[in-house]
Length: 525
Image 1 (cartoon, rainbow, N blue to C red):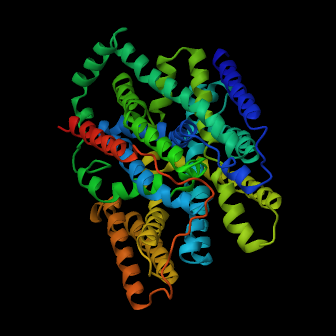
Image 2 (cartoon, rainbow, N blue to C red; image 1 turned 135 degrees about the horizontal axis):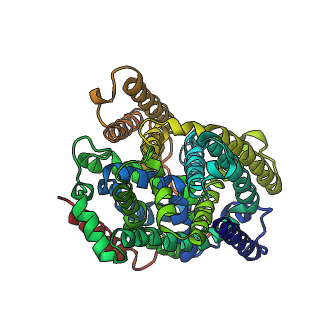
């Protein structure tokens, strides 16, 4: 009961603070609702970006992978900092120069409206079928385990999962969809602090439990008892083979941090380029500490439960229950709940701006665009709630499922964004061909892997992503040579925000990259 009361109390406190912080924002306009009035500063951007990333699919799913495989899965965290640096240096200045609200908007300017609509459709399909269901499933699994919902309500684990999915989905949709981005960003900042504090408490309490109150003794015992869990390289059967770090891993990271609307929307809302770059660099630095929150607890759980959990994805919530006092369990559950909320806003933006305004009613007022976006948000949330419980049957675990199926749209979209900015003559037809070939060939790969020849007969999915990336670039280049644009593309400066760069962005970026390499090499055995 104490845990539930602290959960409700902290959640209500965050909602009240967000309400008073956003009362002056005009959310009847697109910029007001979708981008918080283009007013976000570095600290808010960093907090919102990190909490959107450190949602339940990350903190529950990656710790589940660490429970099974050890520290080698930290590649998903430490290498993310490199992609954030690239985004801050290369992509964000161009995004803000073009005054973008969504990434697909650039694709309309660079290629044509059809290309933008295809990409928006891929994003929305991915959110509805992959991303949001995974967020809801992982969050529900955590809440159900932390509060022992099956025992509390006297229902099966499956029934408890459905109850939590729909409860979290309904409350989260009301808050995220009707609150607008600024409400989400403000609450994100508060919850990000809570997530960092709570996320650090878990390994601290866990190591104290292992070391009889002594953190260093606990860490020594953990490393000495499980040396195989502290090898960042891993063997050939690892979920992230070492060679993939130099192929598809960096492409996936660049897509996620540089073109994924759910993440980059926070930086697009920056009041100027300086604040955006400082916010992203701060986020990149904190990401280097990410393994402490999303990898180490999984290894601690392996040691404490001796590998006896039925579901690896239960490792994190089970550890939270084991090491935290009830009042802190409720607080941390509220923080995870806040992380779920931050993931539900971007689909509203994509539909309102990129689909409804351009295809259903070009003359729609901004009030109507916002209204229709909210209506679609309700639809996509309901669809995600139906899909979420089905993910429990994913054969490769929560995080592995997320990364693999995301390849259906991540690499094709990344390809045309990168080529779009780096070239002046490649035409719209090249982007369309690259999108359909990228999606189609990856679906063929998944079909062969799971229904025909088996995964041992085919390359790792991250290698396949890199192959398709190069292939799609070659396709676009060939089409551009045969049938170039009539006029060279020139990126116009809309002057919506100041795009003067932060003077320390390059040295800070180099320092972050050097630190990433050091951390990764340090754990290599």
